Amino acid sequence: MEGYRGFLGLLVSALLVGFLSVIFVLVWVLHFREGLGWDGGALEFNWHPVLAVTGFVFIQGIAIIVYRLPWTWKCSKFLMKSIHAGLNAVAAILAIISVVAVFDYHNVRNIPHMYSLHSWVGLIVVILYVQQLVLGFFIYLLPWAPLSLRAAIMPIHVYSGLLLFGTVIATVLMGVTEKLFFVLKSPSYHSFPPEGVFTNALGLLILLFGTLIFWIATRPQWKRPREPGS
Ligand code: ASC
Image (cartoon, rainbow, N blue to C red; front, side):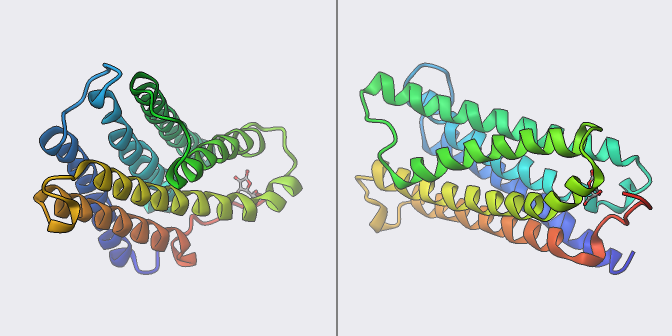
């Protein structure tokens, strides 16, 4: 494989940055916020960022690059597709639970639903992600679709997957920003309180994770070699 060391370096960096993002979101809700619980209140809301970052960003990012791992190239294509689909399914389930947590929280507190740009883009991206998962399952995992259809849809599948991943990251950054403006009153966000600075750093980590995954996924020389007739 061309540039194997470069690949490994970027893969380890992406895993470290992704893992650190998950740690940071946990520190945010457990140390700076109220913690986690399923109480209809703030503890339940806090599952929203934790599940969004863990599932919708980190697990989705790994799902995107599973075909790039050279030591899996000997594994069957079906196994790798199952892992790709399985990780995306876990990400989708965690994303849906994260949305349920917010709806519950808004219901209990009588906060209107779906008024922010974060919520509009977020709901659209969850719905399209589930659509991508279902279409991918029927077209690529089940054996029925003809090769011509698979080949015709593949550029759309790849483009949509990367676009959804990027949009999820943009949505998370909007969510972090609006939450900090909501909760940081005294001292306010604009006075650089530790929670504001720490959570800004979380946003940068997520952006860096996306940057690394996008680079790994788009290097043609790191793609899984095609099997004849596939
Ligand atoms: C598949 C598969 C691929 C693509 C290809 C069409 O199901 O395993 O590599 O579709 O055949 O682009």
